Length: 147
Length: 147
Image 1 (cartoon, helix red, strand yellow):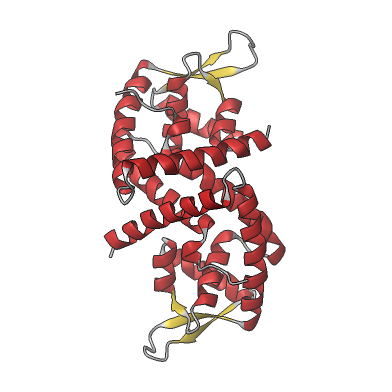
Image 2 (image 1 turned 60 degrees about the vertical axis):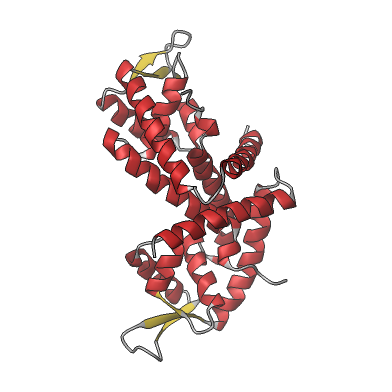
């Protein structure tokens, strides 16, 4: 069996493309004092009106809970999120976005999305949609495997 | 403008999918004492009969030259590659795969490719091809920008 070149290897291409978009997003987010991982936590907190536990954040992001604790610490120090006791389980603390966090997320997301779209400009809008849909199916199937 | 959820964000999906395939490939490569980055260097060295410079490796892999030096050191210590002076420029040393390196690359690549294909099994073969082609176009356009 003939092996494909590395340039045709899907794992290698995913790694390169992911690195390219992360670098692009980090450049856009620097203006807001954020890096991609902090921004992802903030993004999820803003979209969850009642907040999320650090365990839930780790699951969605595919990170270790210990990494999430550090990211939440950094966002809390910047005044973008706060930790509140869960109303249903006093042992769990929920990560909730502050009003400032919501404003920053909105502006940062528009800038980052626009820059990433530009980074992917070799693909038409409909090809970018196809790429997103294929990736979403892989992530959903992996999440289903791990539950 | 309504913002998409993080689960629909292409940068986030690329990061998650890249992480999933890297973890899968690392698990397959562990049997050969390799991790993905070392393997990528070995892969390229095997495919370049006359070898490549560390600078060329860094460019293809999107890594810093200092990172490539460390990876080549590890592969050389394992007897999978060696450094040879370039026949055309004595100041440049080329990374060349050894016979053992070629054998290990062949077996490792078959195992890793098969496991990654399984990790992506939510997509049909033709969808996996589409994913690879879309990613390859993004990488090529970024490489063209940076030259």
